[in-house]
Image 1: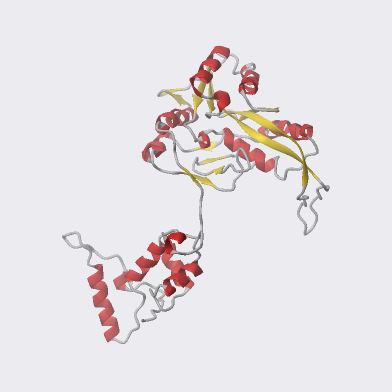
Image 2: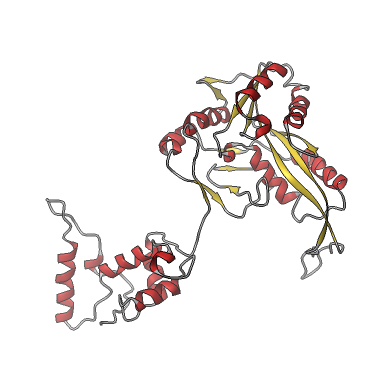
Length: 360
């Protein structure tokens, strides 16, 4: 077998070839002629295009389908595999990196995905995206219309560390004891005024219809919402506010309130999730609270503190973008794994194109 060398630039016969009138590519014949001329001239050839294609195809496979006991492929593992399979006698990692980089292939990375489950995803997502642009049923909202994004962040534990947390010092970050006592947990319910950057919240011992009603009542009982023409409440499909019964319950208790549900399994459309991620980073990490009372005090104090610099989130994903993606009927929605959302396993929003312009 011939051990091919690496060239700093691609030879002419590797460059994209033109297609014939019949639609067939003449790259192979051009490559063969160029290779023949190089051999006749005594020039050691670079790697042929077929090898580049094979390596890229390999990088697009799941490792277990290749018989490898791996979850991800590194450059070195790809190098070892192509050599063991007899595709090439030797090759450098830098060469493989360059080939894969040209097509942005990174098999050593992975990302968690959530696939749309709601058959009416686009129909439900569209009105929410319109509300973020201050439009409802094709008509711009008035000055006395408001949009509220609300949800619950459940099971926020108060963890009392077994040793005191040490403050930061030169050449030493804050040190937090790994072991802790559980002092209980709160359900944190929050409502975010999308266009006014105002936040309302409360802590409850458990979630349910009554706690949600207390949050909504707190907001709807004060101005400007009390006398508003319409207040749109964007919420997910949690059992505490699910379905038409919840819509009717809202309207019966607060005649100017309109409940708008996100699609099933699509909380990423709810802007309050962005606020929850800020709370997770700024208030709850690291989690070191001596009691539930201290945890509640910290959560409630953060709300006015955040409002001092808060601005509406810059949400750029619109109904037009939704249509451009085919309604997301079959496309996966990207969430970055390991982020800080509504719970320890929740992911931080990636696709929404929203970014807080206040504290981060």
